[in-house]
Image (cartoon, rainbow, N blue to C red; front, side):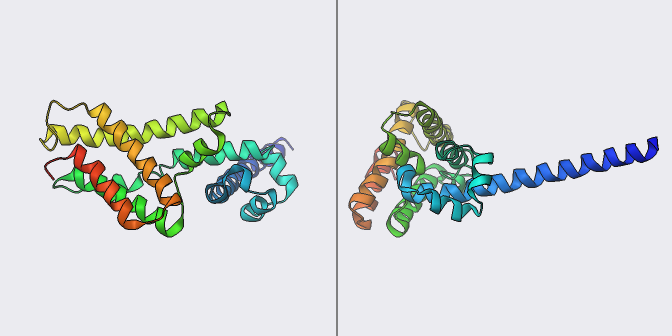
Amino acid sequence: MLFIDLFRTKRNRKANAKFMRTREFDTRQSIASAMEVFWRKGYKGASMTELLAAMGIGKGSFYAAFGSKHELYLQALRHFRDTGMLFKHLKALPEANFAYESLRKLFDQLIERTINEQKTCMLGKAVLEFRGQDPQVAEIVNMGISQLENVILEILSKAQATGEISKGRDLQVLSSYLTAAFYGIQVLGVAKPCRENLEQVGAIALSIVFPNQ
């Protein structure tokens, strides 16, 4: 009898563990799906009907898992930040002139997305929508922007070490400048989606950092 009870307990633990893994996977997928809706429509523009349809769950499951639309938005914003969607393509850097080429690729992809998909960075979109009025949103956004700035700073540091950027230049200022250009191009691209104009802005921004290219 004791053996049977132990067997049942072990089996129940395995079943519960499997359920938790499934729930965790489903929750992450739901957050990713909700992120796409928020990214496209913003917090206020995304309706509960659209969110539930994208996530493939009902109201009961939604409130049990997330509690509120605001909490879901925070998790979606963190997902955008933590999955590195801003700069995944910068991980594989070319050998020659790698800093200039990598950052040029960043701006080219940014312009392409802005023009073709009318999509700006979700973090930047959150800044414009909330205007610093929500401390939780501001904290996530600030951390995400700092991540981008640090990635650019790392690239510039390697460039300075190889002589692509002269030793006397302030890399922190340059990385902040390129981060500002990154967001400025997106806002300008939504307001005035002219590829030639955006490419010129990106080229000028890079020429200030890399005057010899």
